[in-house]
Image (cartoon, rainbow, N blue to C red; front, side, top):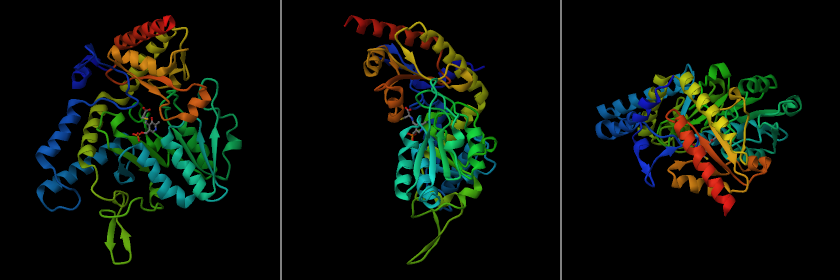
Length: 409
Ligand code: C6P
């Protein structure tokens, strides 16, 4: 069990007010808030040992290098990778997926090959594959959705064939909260000789994700959704695949030797980290992982199951509201997207904001999914370790007042 009261004290921003009301922050799927320990890790770096890494012989540089590599180790431990060198530090999930598209897919996917994805992807895990398919003469295929907005795998044998070279899907949908069976899909992909990329942007912050257990080829995630600063993320790549990848960006740090007309590549993972990396934010991500590990990811998940169930029950009172995603909590995370009848999600978001309640509204960078759901946009509340049932009550009563207001308008 999480001690939510104690946790809330670690997040300075949670004590601020918005329009004179206590902040109710329910936009965690967009980005999470940061605890004091993460903010402190950032200031400590700049105040005490700011310097470039992997190239200095002076004390500050060696200290910063050690802390940066320690952060990589912590990220590796967090996702169950026995080897830290299999992790490439990037800016975010989007960059991680683009790295795979450029460095692996452009060289391993050819004419007539297929990439299998789903109708519930964030644009970050769709648009790069559209480009690969176009450049390489390959075809994009989609696993359809069931009426409960889970993946419909009934036709998987037809969709996944010897032509499939990559299965790319999210572990948890940022709109529906649906948790996808990525382990089973990985096994199915491997049976036909395909690789699997898991977009872990919404799962790694909220569930125990273990790359060995999932046996995935690629896992991408962002620090900013899991208590770390913006501008830092991770791409995990299975060893045998990593060795087969071309560099992404070219320049300093990623080379071993350079001549006038050619160069050789540095060891892994530096080969994929050209230029000065985001040192401060990587170190602060290490602090974020320490924080989550101390809570225990099982406890994080349990808390989110409990608060999401509470929210789903409370939403049943709102007859005019459609809630998306599966009802079974074993198949969903702490994301509740909804559509309030005749009231546009942006109006709902604006009215809730006046009550100090931060939710996200819009297409959530998942336009093809909006088309499937036949809505222009949704409103979305998303929970994390510091959210309480009282905050869900505030959300529901503000939502009731909003719907009442618009029904009179
Ligand atoms: N979703 C949301 O509000 P970046 O922006 O690169 O850190 O993450 C991209 C991304 C990729 N996949 C999934 C499943 C995601 O949810 C996101 C980010 C945020 O839903 C911002 S659009």
